Length: 202
Image (tube, rainbow, N blue to C red; front, side, top):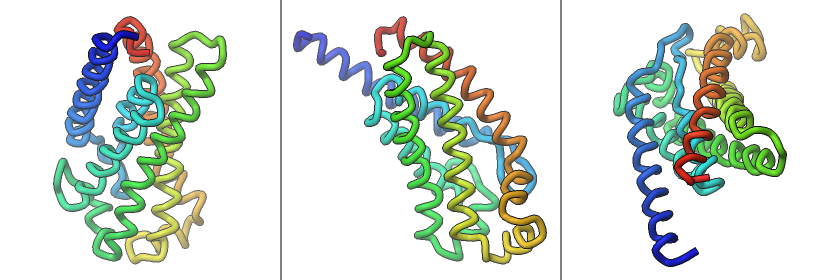
């Protein structure tokens, strides 16, 4: 690869990262509210796209941006999270871990999935769809697990968890959310993978 080609590749990837952060910010304002203070979000899609284009580094960068935006929403920045605003006062550090670190891990785990799929003979669309699906799945599992672990004893959650049990609380809180997020993430990320291939970014 020549220096000129390398430079163009770096510029293209920097541009893609900037565009994906911009998409994250836009998506932060279009969450679909659901019961229990949670909402349907599609912010894991840019994370999956970054993973396909740049591997682990892309997943960590865009996953981190997703997590930072999510944390700032607890304070009414880049949208507003009713549940986050209610819980952040209990322990801001644990809220940062629950919101930020979980999304960085989503990027890392999605990168592992994508790397494994690249070794298969599956069509590109399927590989992208599975990566997007897994990114949404990891997001739900990590977000809810840390939510219950860190804040399950708070006044906001303790009653519902005691009444339903941890598993049923999670299912009833994000059941519809998770299904919609995983389906949309799979469809969009699969198509994005094909587009990235045509743009010679993967």
